[in-house]
Image (cartoon, rainbow, N blue to C red; front, side):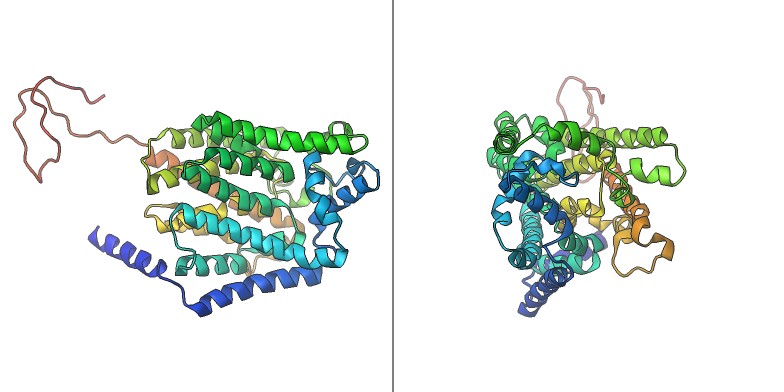
Length: 418
């Protein structure tokens, strides 16, 4: 045990030291290279970003954004996309990849601050550079220009605000992220667990108000309910379904009947939500344990939702992964386990998988990572939630001294262990 403490202390002492300036320059170079590569490979700032911008263009032209079946967001997203739609395409092509990288950097910074890790530390600089290089969905997200990056930035920022007691501000941040893309809707459960009713009202009111505004501005907003929502509930079509990493979509491709796959995914999701509730109920004082409790509860809720959401793409995990990685500075956290890194291996860049797992079969590997992280985090919650009974002192027991027993003798009356 002393050896383990010395090793952990040595690692933390090294990792939390300020990173050399050359390391910071290399990290900035990596982010710039990822953004530049994406801008050279796309003509309009990314395919997924283009869907939202085209919806805003349709609104400016007096057409319904929901005439395009690829626009799958709330009406509030059209309002959010209006400023970008006014920019020239050449400017979008250059700024969108940089903005995506910057938002992911904001999420990483907020994740570090939750655990009081200096932003200039070796852990912060090296960790983000490795994430950008070695984690394949990072470059994929920047290339597509998907608005998941807004949720990847908003969730850590909201948790940082909540950890500091500013729950109302956290609710406003989550509400704004939902208005852009409804990915963080499951996080409503965190505010319910914490009984932060004003913050919960902010989460609901911000996207609702912006959606009403968007619906008033656009023609035929009812298409969202008659066309877009059924399309989403059906799991989209053959264009996106091969990339869907949710068990509901992948297991039927492996021969499992669709209803059975849906039941299995539902059971996993409900189990994950139960684990999130158990993690939140465990008391935690202010400090590292409170931060760990907040982060693990939020990540468990999001992972449970990814198990049943349709679709669930590989870059969705970037919403929770920076938070889990940043917790690695704490002893006993998930990144301290080799199983955590084994779960991430299917999505690591440069791994020579067999040709059968390329392109449209990548969803098999993505589902393995999603399920692996959910099971590991749920197992950690259940293991750490076991009750350890302390020593029992009954009336007439002889006094004990240190170091044999640290319990203070009770002078009278007996108490039971249960």
